[in-house]
Amino acid sequence: TTDLQVNAPDCSCPVVDAPTDGVPATICFGDDNTAISASVTAGHTIDWYATESGGSALLSGSLSYTSSENEVDVYTYYAEARNTTTNCVSSSRLPVEYTIKANPTLSLTSADCAPDLLTYDIVFTSNGTVSSTLGTVNNTAKTVTGIPAGTNVTLTATLDGCTTDLQVNAPDCSCPVVDAPTNGAPAKICFGDDNTSISASVTAGHTIDWYATESGGSAL
Image (cartoon, rainbow, N blue to C red; front, side, top):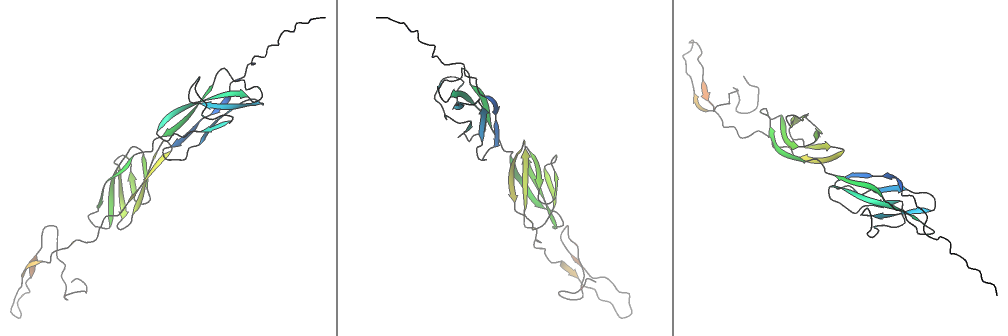
């Protein structure tokens, strides 16, 4: 007989390069979640983790991962490369961030008719830059002025690429009840005398227009 001792070859895992070219993703609160991704060399895939080492894979065998988070925050996920033939993995993981940004605040403080009742003005509160479908916006004073009466508007606040909309219903700028003049003072003269005035009284902030008819017609 003849014996031959054979030494086992080294079958330990070769070095597997960690993923590269991580592509983060950013959305605004309330938007659909989008995927983050990374790259590996041919013959490899990526397993995704929530921790830098250890733990269970969130998703295996994918170059991209879509988070299920829906709260405003910055989340970090970790991409681990794996050889699809040997299942050997990289010794380190690539961190890739997923960010959910807060939408700007936007609220209505007041909507008041102008003194002439032809337009109305809005006062708002926001931490963003506000635009309006009508009227003149002053983001320093946080006002929208000169909106035609009876017309609803939509305000849009923008901050860091995120937006918040607010519909504002026009206030009722129709005329309020105005009391008729009182204390009418008639006048009488004799034929040939100089004409004298008649008069009446109204409350503060009002005046009188005089007509020759009980309704309609043009003011004298």
